[in-house]
Image (cartoon, rainbow, N blue to C red):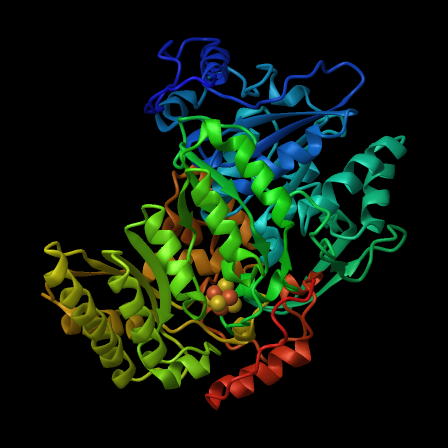
Length: 589
Ligand code: SF4
């Protein structure tokens, strides 16, 4: 029977203090509370230290990390062990100390591994990549490292978006889906007789970008003229993203190691369907995980059944959950297994009566939806097909089912947005509140509506990749206006994010290799981005507030995510005319 353990807080985890060897003690204490980790002898195997550049608490709820761990260890020629960013207290104590960063499974120093691989999901973790390299005793920049150091491979969701800000730190960027990348990496490792040969072999494989094989030429602040493969390297002009064609014969990514010491500790996470066919013009995930590919229903249910002793809830991790043709029977079966069900988020067009009812029956008290804006016109601009009438019908369905709380996502700074559109956010939310209150009266308990509002940050690989971000003064003014509009509405809470936060996230998302200097500086100064930009002397505004439509090349175009530039240009024109693009057939696999 599995152990039942209460979560605990991680500061210096072992409680062994921060003396020499404390990392080993921490790792051993961590293992004691886990189910499902893999321990293999190292001898004769390719040794991979797999890092999540954040704490254990955050990283162990990341399905990407768990999947790469499973895929690597599924190969008997490989031993893969995990490593995380130490907690704050440990980090504070670390500068100038020499207790090496060790893996959880065998407490081996990371510097002894063949490959040190990072799964990076968020721009804010870029500085943590450098911290972990430093703690492992490795130089941050690939050019400064020795050929006997571990090979640094950086992959994860952000490498799809734009690998350039991290390029100088990586020996290899893995762009795409782990199911294709992991076997190709392992095969190339076994074929290669030297580090140079390995890099050459990987450069020929789909999804592997070797930054040192390319020269970058610039054309002024924030502008790249070209990224050109060096003669003799055999590197391609652009690197095509690696993706599985169909997922019906692939095991769905799911939790393989259970621990109570993570954000979703009691939850079995599983990906049900990959991709979303709605093609909202701002959404990087929508464009880059096409086509929509459902995982095999039988495998989903078998994995869930096997995980049931370790988890009470199942977290369904998919951007378009209801694009799975069997979603209703899947929910019914999960419910029959005794699981509570938590979807990551739901598209409004997917909220049908059986789905809402099944979620309610599973104990869900809150649903998250993303109207994005309050006006139908602005929704046509971003290619969202639902209308306010649809949203209110779904809201009625949600509250009448007994679900008490609603979480909403809105954006401001959308192209062509006017004051009326901000008023429309208030009006739509008020109309949703009316429905909530009507059902609360009957039930006798009142829930709440929590709305998060973020400025739109144009993302690489989307229709808006050429557009400047709305300037700080305008966003500040819009935020102020919206705060005024929604002040003091009972049971409705608006969380309007600051422009500053989006500004530096935008810089990391839209940057080129010159932004790596800022990342390095921010890692040294404790994450003070404004000071880091000033110290380096980078013209950050040139990355954020400039229209890029006339640029010959965009830094992220070194990765071909599968969408044509001409398509994005036509989508941009249609967006500015508030014209929708009809979605292609939803399920193509
Ligand atoms: S519906 Fe959601 S996941 Fe799909 S493209 Fe739109 S924003 Fe992205």
